[in-house]
Length: 200
Image (cartoon, rainbow, N blue to C red; front, side, top):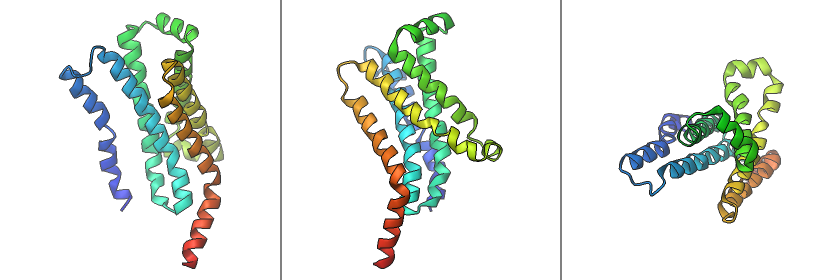
């Protein structure tokens, strides 16, 4: 049943971008539509990173093995929204000037953190295929732990961006920390859940 939802979740994951496109066409994104789209795509990058991270602890805790089918999809969507986020900033704010991009990356800490987060996602996206999983073997799992560094960089990027109104970035940071701890204890939780329901 869970596996059959994949095409619908794939299509649903595009809805945020389609919504932004419609709102842009209708001129309903406020006084600064570029800033609104940039902010929204950045947040959706963080949300898809969370969706990617939640798969393993859910699978280990409750035995929902079919969920593994969605981990790669959510991870690639995180990269996709991160790429759109970067391209909007680079294209509409920097006019695709590599020199201006480099200047901002070096001088502005929130840009530095955001760029680091995106760069760390590149090897995760590139090695997401079954061919790379077979080729890298155990090293694949080690490499894909970069997702935690990506999440930290993303939260720091958001935190430095907003400066004073830090409630939302701290919320994302708290969620990532919870998912990290849950993943660490998920195997033991899975044994506890299995034992409890076996007795009942």
